[in-house]
Length: 104
Image 1 (tube, rainbow, N blue to C red):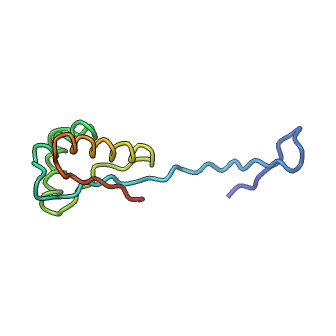
Image 2 (tube, rainbow, N blue to C red):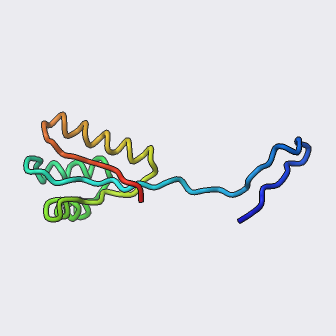
Image 3 (tube, one colour):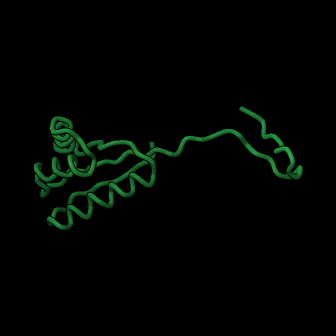
């Protein structure tokens, strides 16, 4: 760990910490339900999460069989945006698809 140092030409009270922290990361998850079609889940994965067809099918099957599927890991702002997009798409198509985020 580095020590804060005094900036030349500044008053002694102003210290700069040169340590940079990585932003917090969040998993975005899709949850299974009895109404959302598998085709729609694949569409969401392709359009919102930019997954290839094989990736989208694998995640969709995880949602179907295990009840949950990992869509990706993102910073808080990106994760929130993707959750919001999924919920908006699902609402427009009258699906109860649930998407959530949790800190890694």
